[in-house]
Length: 187
Image (cartoon, rainbow, N blue to C red):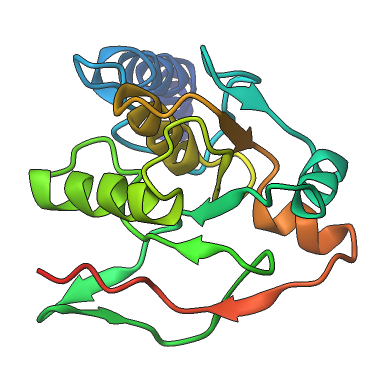
């Protein structure tokens, strides 16, 4: 009986990793991205270093940009629960000083209302100047900001920056943060 149990255990230990690897391979390919190339799942995982047509910036770059003229519009896209026409906040969300929080605009699949919420707010904040500097951020290794930056590029914004390192890197550098509230979507 012990011999049978050991044989079964040995078999399972050899087969289970292969099954898990096969499942992960499938998840890492087609099912993680939409037909348009937006990340659909596992938003907090390693991101690429760049986005085509958008400049990736570091923490020192962001700090310098905030002191430049014109001061860029900073868009924080970290998700927030939205129910009954309001955001449900259980604790404060901190971002770089002056950032505008447009939650849920980095999801891989978005309905037209959320897309309009993103684009119309950025248009308003840039005074409809598509070449005005806009920085998109969330947390480090976060596909939400990657998706949102690509959406803004598709909407015609041309002076885009992606702060890939995110608010956690900003805070780890000892830089100031402030509590922000989501911009109401109005729908």
